[in-house]
Length: 211
Image (tube, rainbow, N blue to C red; front, side, top):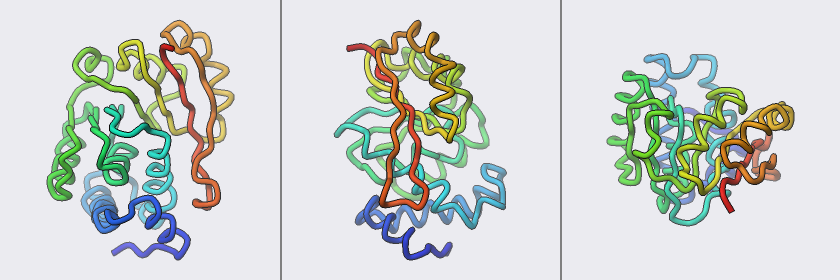
């Protein structure tokens, strides 16, 4: 079992509530089969809670009750599976093109008994029209200028994109402004979530599409 610091445990209890045990099992999967199969580097194991799981899960608070969420480039289930764990009211579609990652995601979903998750093996651009989403999420997929074209079309003209980004978020927004507008984005903002809860809060770019 990967030990949490006292601060991480307090944050995890607040975010996952009575599903903390499931979140711990997910982290075990990441630390074992996830690294063995190359979904995460072994160096990431000591910081799985702080840098990956909590960093992603805290963003779930931005999503409306009962929303349908499509997570683009799910990889090791970050952020998609953390949302499914923290918010059982959400319906998640994890979009991932690589077969070995899809197999691993399905194994984890089955083991955790998550009935609010569907794993779709396809590329984001091929999922347009096949996935109904109110919110599209992504983390560590590509620069916003490219990511906008992979995420906004999945919303079918209405909803929002939540992209977990790093310190260069504002700069990325500036570079992507034109393409975001062209694709139907009506408002873009950079948000910080997890302040007072996480040692390092999470930076999110929110793109509103439609009115």
